Image (tube, rainbow, N blue to C red):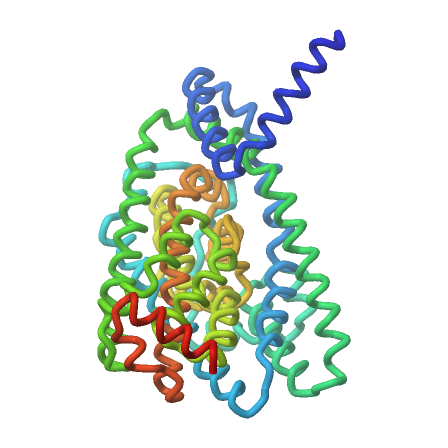
Length: 433
């Protein structure tokens, strides 16, 4: 190869690497569809590329969930007031998350985006499962052997053990800090490894979408549009319906005033798809626009960035149903309960960064035995879905902060009801105090 050719390839590679990952994945999806239609049945030769990507995601699930859950639980410090606020936050976030995924399942069932796609999973992926009894389901949540649960990928058991271990580490105080630091380090390493694996996503999506398009043609495009509609509809219902109801009934506050005060945070959330990246703007909105005391917002908002994933849970409900419908797999009522429990508990450990929900989707699919090939199909439109679900996550953080501040008498009602100019003046006075 000539030096000139090498230079051209180097520039092309640099240009490709400068493209945002979400756009790379979208391009991989589109190129995969084109290649699959062009190659027809021969596109199956590209499937191993996608299978390798799916295997790398499987590799992440157990250690990522285990470490990040422990870090999420141990991040709550137990001073007197913070302990009480932490408990309220924890209950609020998990409660709204369970409602969000239930709403997602409902919307997915109503719109049925995957019905009629008639995809075929790999052999053994979706073997028929006998529905266990309620008692058996509850008993099986607690692992008799945590090491075996980790080794065998029993996700619900891993979640329960991680939460219990995290609580125990907090309760033993100073003696637990070395272990907490170790898990924090491991969690950071797993987040970095996840970032590395996600860089392979465009190629994995290309391989699997080529196979899907070669086998099923362009009939899959309409269901993907229905998935987007279902997720956005669910997000709107959760924000404008459920959150408004909570604000007006629980906190006796005007929801319109609330949404007016947080619009800049929602705009940043939609464009960045990162609740962690939106945190500084969320803090500013809570303090300057809503009148939340900084003592409350500085604790509840960062905690929410870690454990509140209402939008992600809603998205997982819709997409899990889409995958089940696309592959013609009937879910039992026990599967629905399992999806709700898994997504709710796993939300504690979901990182507030772009693409994290896609990794957690593999967790939900694995728990109920759904084909992970469905992840590659969703990955192509994940950025569009990520934008909507991040808005829900950020709005949920701010709703929780506002309601908890009101319950602790740490919300300035005059400030909350003030117009924009008055809010800024009041915020300046508070800063001077």
